[in-house]
Length: 188
Image (cartoon, rainbow, N blue to C red; front, side):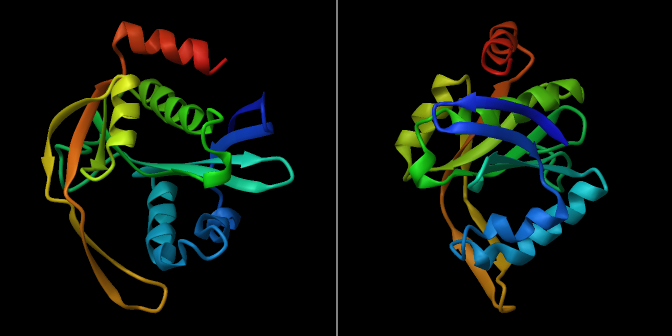
């Protein structure tokens, strides 16, 4: 499903949901190969409606950005299936940053959540990443707490990895009037 196609300073960019054929491209030429099983599981979750995987695709280049949205989680404070959704795996390839691609992905994900009836968008950002935290605050997110940042995954070779990345949890009321106006301006 193509949500939108725009002409940006870097060319024609499409924001759309992930299809199975896109899974290898999410590994970004091997940089994220260790998340192969995670991506496959998230794709399966998207098929049953528990998540939505968005990508930014540049004509002639391929996938240049992504954001995943978890609609339901065992941790209801992150994603409860009706009011709160959790955004993660949000990234833009380094040589395409600062061109508005990340904002387009984020606003598309939030706009889609509004259409699904959600009110709150939740995400975590590493305590080591003040630059990204400031960006989220500029687009309406507020720090609501701290996260231990402990999680695990099985890599492409079947090895278990434990991650410890203390984070801030941020939330945004995506239905607030000022936020809806931003979506209308950015995603036209």
